Amino acid sequence: MRIARNNHHMLHVMRFLTGLNDEFSVVKSQILILDPLPSMTKIFSMVLQFERQNCAPNLDDSKALVNASAGKPQGSGS
Image 1 (cartoon, rainbow, N blue to C red):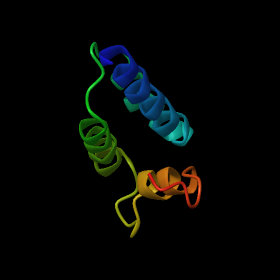
Image 2 (image 1 turned 180 degrees about the vertical axis):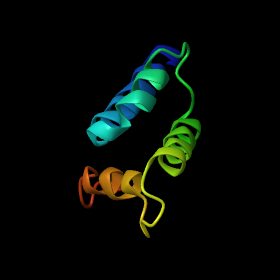
Image 3 (image 1 turned 60 degrees about the horizontal axis):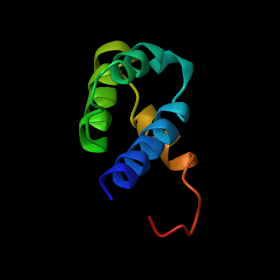
């Protein structure tokens, strides 16, 4: 059961990271070298922190939020 849970977590992490724009490649690489992979909450936090530090400050919406929601299938229930 633990192996299945870890595989499920890794799948969600990979889907989230592949949905990000190329400007997030630095933080993607930093996350992928961590062992073990952090929780999705921690990963999302790291991406938001990177965005705040390195992206244009006058954006109203988070690019990470827009990209993550665009990649999520509609009506999936998760």
